[in-house]
View 1 (cartoon, rainbow, N blue to C red):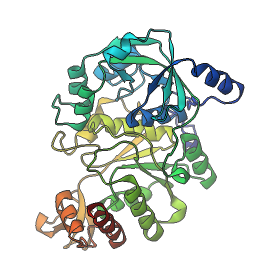
View 2 (cartoon, rainbow, N blue to C red; view 1 turned 180 degrees about the vertical axis):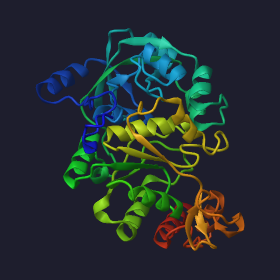
View 3 (spheres, rainbow, N blue to C red; view 1 turned 90 degrees about the horizontal axis):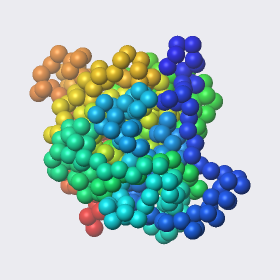
View 4 (cartoon, rainbow, N blue to C red; view 1 turned 30 degrees about the horizontal axis):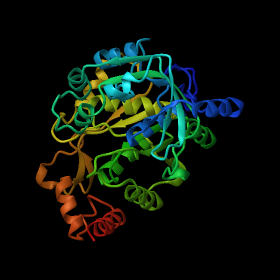
Length: 393
């Protein structure tokens, strides 16, 4: 980001916000043409990535990565033109399907009901090393990691090429919250926000999250609360429940003119440090100037150290990412301090801290017991208790 550019007009990654949605006469031409093409149905994960490509959330990508971009991203966390990028965005197919596809071919991408959503212009077709990708991107080759498990089970051949999107997936949830990068940027400009901090979450916001968000709000104009609602693990809390929690929290505890709730239709990869970089770049495309990176960002199980997602930012040159990370330590309510705190600000020992494990919280909620208000707002806990009752009935 250059210093003379108004921050609320922060340029998209690569300098231009991509839009791959085709309209007008070209839309009709391609749609008619697509009916005669080979068709490939999209999984939910592929539907998520297609939407992110369509609206420019993955700028500067205009489609799925070819060999040069893919290999450099895996090994060096940069695109072939030198621009930082940490997660491969790929279109995988099995070998049998790949045999029926040639480079230069156009393929219609469909949903499960055979609605044509997009055309993939196949520029490259190539095999790849799954173990190499697992170790580089996920930092483990263990199939116990959910991201690695998906990698091993999906196709052995990658198709690279631009996409022309004819329509976005149907039955998309949270339409009123589903703002594109162009739309969030317009909101920021209308509200006069010159600096905006993005917050990534796939869980309901508890008091520790609230604390770090409000700390960030002390130094910026606005907060983009940006929950991920794409494909997640089956044991993650469903998106509709999480959204009710966010709405309840924002209604009572946040200044309405300084927070924007919008959803991110990306899939969760659980890639820890690499995904922290990815989440930051994506929020830059949505117009954020700052991005919150907490403890074990995008982690899963015990695959990553608590602050690996902080350290990875040091692997890029100052200013190279074009968005400012805000690093937060472990936060909690301290009974001795009488307030929220972190290990950076609190001198007291752990006996004074109210900090519950996710397992303990889930046990309390299933039993219909509200966690301490110092850990979770009661309005949020009640929503979660009702949801757990419904899922077990």
